[in-house]
Structures are given as structure tokens and as C-alpha cells.
Length: 166
View 1: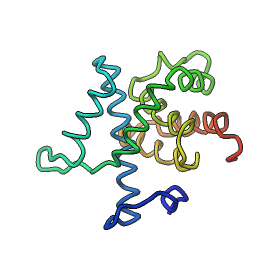
View 2 (view 1 turned 90 degrees about the horizontal axis):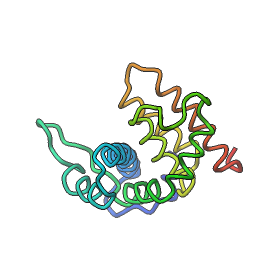
View 3 (view 1 turned 180 degrees about the vertical axis):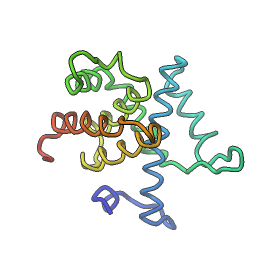
């Protein structure tokens, strides 16, 4: 259990574990939505509505998608868009000088923006944010070195955004 889970209000009938899973799913969906926004040029409201209506809990090829926490999903998207310049600058400082954010994989760019939104605007402890987004990286890059890269970049970003937490 994380301190984030212990302090978050729970709707009746939802266990802490279900709430944690919904928050994890919301983070994964936020990365997918940010990627889609960049690739298609769609506005945040359009993509948010699509995900909440057609992706949360949807069934594809007999597989049910996880239900996401709509509040965390919406806040992460809105904050990633509203604070994108600040988040991108923070990400650039965490990356090697030869690899500015504009040159990295668009999935990683979306992930850093979602995580950066939570690190700069969210209430979850930085270590929870890092752990959750490293798990998201593993979902997208199960055989690659990207999860370790994500861990290192997010650790740098977290120390800049919330130094008091370390």
C-alpha cells in the first residue's frame, strides 16, 4: 500500500486494491491519450471523451480493458497540456544533452509529460509516480532498456520538482 492509496477518497464498494488498479490504468491511458493527441493533432477534450467513453472498461477481441480512475486521468491530461512547456524543459534537463525531448520516442515523450504533470501538479509521492510510470514503460517496452531509462529520467525530474521528498 502506498501513502497515495491510503489518503485518496474511496467510493463505497471499491477496495484499496481496485482503486490502485484504477489509478494505474488511468496513468497508462493518459500516456496513450497524450501519444494520440500528438500523433493526430486532436484536442485534449476530444481525446479525453473518447477514452472515457470508448476505452475505459471496453472489450476488444474478448479482452476487457481496465477501468481507469477518471479524475486522475482527466487531471493528468489537463496538467500535461497546461504545463507542457515547463514539463518539457524539466525533461530536457534530465536527458543527455544530445537527446532533447523532441528527438526521443513519442511514446516516451508522452510518458514523461504524464509523469511530469503528476510530479509538478499531483499529490502522489514522487516515488509512487516513478514506480507507476516505470511500470507503464514496461508495458510498452517489455523487452527493452527503456524502463531503466525512464527510471533515471523520472528520478532526476522528481528531485527537481519535489526536492523535499528526497
